[in-house]
Length: 582
Ligand SMILES: Nc1ncnc2c1ncn2[C@@H]1O[C@H](COP(=O)(O)OP(=O)(O)OP(=O)(O)O)[C@@H](O)[C@H]1O
Image (cartoon, rainbow, N blue to C red; front, side, top):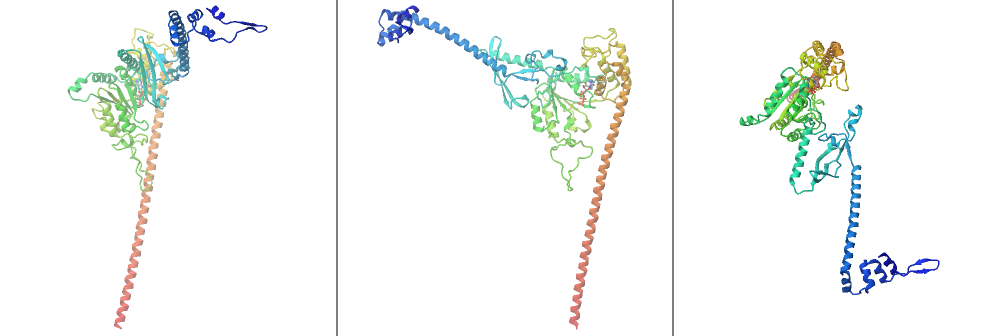
């Protein structure tokens, strides 16, 4: 075919110029650009010039065959072009996406290893103490994946102020699936929820019900209280959770409140976390001293709680501004006539300027919160300051006092602290540890991979624990303080016992000094107050005396004037009388 095409153009050989092709005629052009069938026709028959002739020529059988070839070849090239272009644009968009990756150390939602950067677990112990780096889905970028054989795309939209997520108002995930079966979407959502709940099971939520941090729940065996206390509390909560019908049959609101009060660092919060772990409930913690929290914000937070959960109000006394009165707490103190604000009543806690919660607002929030099977926990160090309305049964059904450490607690703490690790038996197997549950201590063991101390036989451990508890004066130091002391001797149980008496002595001296300081401070405050009162009294007396003097002088002046006037009148009357007589 090519041969024929070439032969149709007459070649002219000019000397010194090589081959020169003359300008093609119409016939020549047609033979070049129309298919070979037409070419054949052009050779065998003259090209028709009228329309009907051209149409007949185009649709003649041999021409159709060539058209078909043209379509197939053209289609092939077009398909190739589309494949190449599609691949190229996908590559480009993947490249753009890979440049548009958000990386964060915050843990949003479930902590999934799938979003953690590769190799994060291989870091040295220095890096392990930091939060892991994680990929976050980019905003407004389409991500595609296969779910149960269906093609699925996801786009994450955030309304609000964008990153950081803390300022975000609403997050929406748009998902589209290429399917006619709606069940697939339902399955996807259910699976997502199941996975989320499973990931949340050992975590808890903080602060304004927002997931700003998460912390692993604690094992109940790691909480050491006097015998029976935690068992009673756990049993009570368990019974409550399965008694919905009992409550409804008797018309009693299905709620339960626990008030844990007492010394700081005695294990109130730890016990609540452990109970949540045992009951498989999420914990929602709110700090009432949070800046700017007012009655309506508190109420909104309570309404956001899920049906089954533990709501924890830490330091419920934190809002105790002037005894947490039934009035608003943001009302400024009245100004005394002397120009100074009235001082708070003696014995009342200092005003917390940031809080705007009233007692009635708090009571209302408690009633909203403690509904439909929710368990409410509240903790306080200042039990005596709480309003009776706050502590009454039906709001706070069970009150438990947490005291400073007893001898029993000190001994158990020592045994847990220096007892064997998770999978490690005691040196002498036949002698059981008194604690009996050392597998789940919740404390770092001296025998774990990083901390190594001497291995103690069970007799030795018990003996040391006895000595340690003997040195402790009951109800003098908190469990947190004891734990802090033992932390100083993580791998030195013998030294821990040896130095315990000395440490306790120091603690006592510090406490006494603190007490003395407090007494001195109180005496100073009293003296200042008395001085202020005396000064005020003196000032008042001076003012009163001055006033009396002023009044007396006024009176004397008035009397003098009156006297003079009378005298003047008398004199003038006398003169006129004498004048008449004369
Ligand atoms: N009874 C206990 N058993 C085991 N550990 C305890 C106990 N009490 C306190 N601790 C330890 O002391 C630390 C502080 O405990 P926690 O925060 O539970 O005290 P708290 O009573 O809630 O204190 P606060 O009233 O100041 O909030 C925790 O690390 C915990 O391990």
